Figure 1 (cartoon, rainbow, N blue to C red):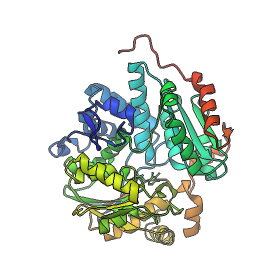
Figure 2 (cartoon, protein in one colour):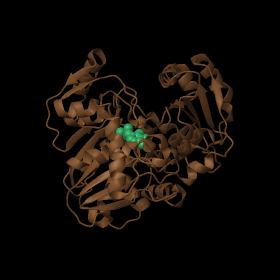
Figure 3 (cartoon, rainbow, N blue to C red):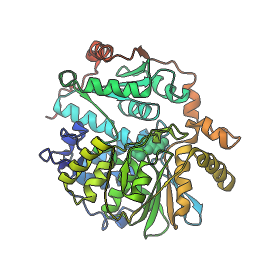
Figure 4 (cartoon, protein in one colour):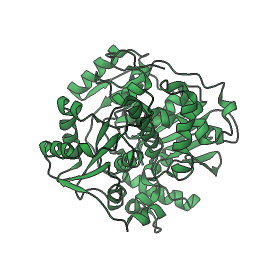
Length: 462
Ligand SMILES: *Cc1c(COP(=O)(O)O)cnc(C)c1O
């Protein structure tokens, strides 16, 4: 499988090059040149343990790896070491299901992709004798999953900036209690936007970027989308009967639901993909009116979805226009200039709904009354929107409720807990404080760059 850019500006490259490139060099997103047809393999895959299913789904995409190595990678990442089951499906009666993606090390669905990405990075870097320093900015949620994916791995370091004092306590502890030498938590004296600006400024210094092999793990990385297609297959294969199924997906950057759409394009029988947003409703507005227009960012009870411009959306636009990169280039430049564009298309498979904070609180309370399940605020958006779906319908649950005790506490009396989150309250922390200054950040990276754990092994295959 080869990968090309949605903007048409790069020659086809391998999976390994695509993963290490992240964002395409022409500013576009990397997409596979074609998709395998998995429809005839589906029944054969029924009953496979998750690691084997992941290898079966992903092998055609991982052209740098032999199929045996893909199996080995998936067994390492999604076996015992993962923590809990990767994607158990809970039946709720009347054709309704919950796909629980929060049993990984940081209790959120981002673990599914970032645990895999860490392992793939490690193997690619070792093979190529390269190093990677990942720079990331987080308002809480992504940071811990990225750290958990990369901690302790040779050949790489991760520098994660968060706004000092503005991250929920539990989420901050999930990051700062990781003491591995290759993990640098940096509290910036500023806001999340300042952290993002610092990241762009430092990564935008191309000499610096090259000298220190800076990279990113953001949600546009193809390996993340690919890893997420697997659990759509896993959900389907756990259903009691064959036939089309609908999914309701809490959506921010459009990565999770895009993976569902790719699974559909690969032959998974999907009836409907219900996109649920919080009050940041750029995508529901687009799917309902054809107008894609930037709005203000609202801070909500589902903070991992507080996004206005969905970074993965460009992939869908590209396929919607029959893989025509010149249309994508035109639409994206219109968006950059005017903050909006319009398309005239039928999105048959997609439905959408925006769910505000008040409705989130109501939904957490109602779901608890009806099923005694406690939903986290992100999952609650999808639960609410799923009411519009015909059964069988699967709600994708993206986080453990114990990560969001305040939001849950507004809806019900019970405070969900989790042993992982209780344990970190007692652990020592490691954190560096920096001012909101790109030069200071560069100095920091420069002074720690040599601490990178070695990736070289004598018998490395080149
Ligand atoms: C990141 C995140 C989302 C949004 O997923 P996207 O792939 O960005 O659409 C939803 N819920 C939780 C808990 C998340 O961390």
